[in-house]
Length: 177
View 1 (cartoon, rainbow, N blue to C red):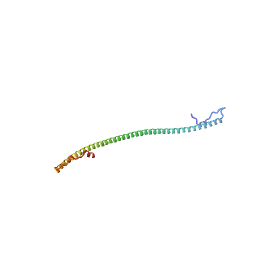
View 2: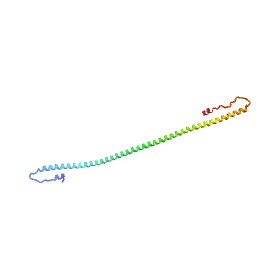
View 3: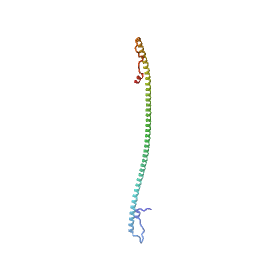
């Protein structure tokens, strides 16, 4: 059974012939009751403080758990963002490399087309020059024949030194073209 300060104050003892001094016992019991009352109040106060501390501790633990969860989520999100950025960077690099490769291929194709066009133009030039030489030669031959015919018709009796050939340098004409 627990004793309260009231129990101590109301406690009565049997009287004996040679017992303790009643006033001294009563004063001691009063002091003891006051001390126990003070201890009980202090105990109650400490219990309330402990309860408040436990409540605060529980809140702090919840806060700590929330912070740890948030930090873990932030780290996970950061890792995902970094990984996503790396993937996007790699994709951009691959696309750029493909575009660069296509540009190089087109440039090579264009260079080949230009080269082929130059070769074709040179061949056409040679063909045209050959045809021109043939035309000039045939025209020169026709001219020579006309000059000879004209000389024969105009002065058959005179003995003039004939130049039976017209001096035409076909290669010189073709080179000038």
